[in-house]
Image (cartoon, rainbow, N blue to C red):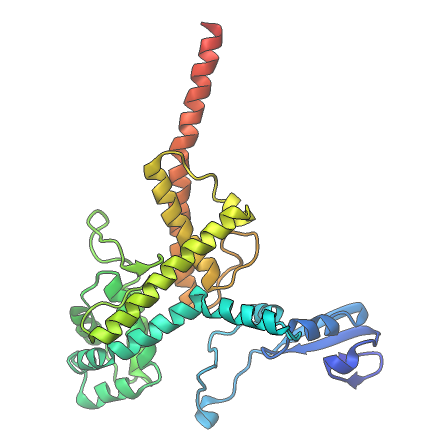
Length: 340
């Protein structure tokens, strides 16, 4: 942080209690909400934040598991505002840990990690049989992008695509000789080709998604892995229902924005199924605002889930239309009765 009238660069901790004309704050992902508040309230006339989103050169230091390749100024600031640095009591710490480990964000991460391990050999065999040369296939399997590629293949399969036929077709589509990372190229091709569920608009099958968001892992795997995935699936769906029930009980603004649950049992079932997807989205991406889906998504994965949540919002609105029409018809009948 730099205090302009003194020309000094100080930390946010040392700046507490100081006042200056203008303050210029350097923000990165490690900053807490408390220090950000202190830093952004030192200037009388102006307080300006500069968000660091640059990353080390991977060719020198290599990628790290915690790196976010899609970080933006908005996403870093959102993370800072949610990063509480104040010390918690023992009870608060236990409650916070229990809550974080039970969220859909955590459960979905566990599910996807288990799914990747459970089917790694299957995806590796599919890559080797896709039409790539032996050297190219091994490069794909050894690439850092192999994990994201297999995640896209799982998403495509959940969208009812025949991935064993899809991958060779995408390999043949265009040359790969000049590709720096074939796995990354194939990942983008799979994502583009399988964005929609397979089949015609009329005969298209429903995607196999957990809580309406997370592609289900299907195909061969060990019984132990299948059981572990089934357990996570149950926990994810139970969590989505619990988040929705809590929001309804608290009359949360985002639930009110969905409209009242229809009285008709069939439409009520559709409403609740769709509303639980919205609840799952909010829990997965830690949306706390009154807006139903929060701010615009930043990462590619969140954009996909955001589109799915927007689709179910249309279902909710359609479910409420017949009820509104019925109320209008009832009012019309009542009005006619007054003058008959």
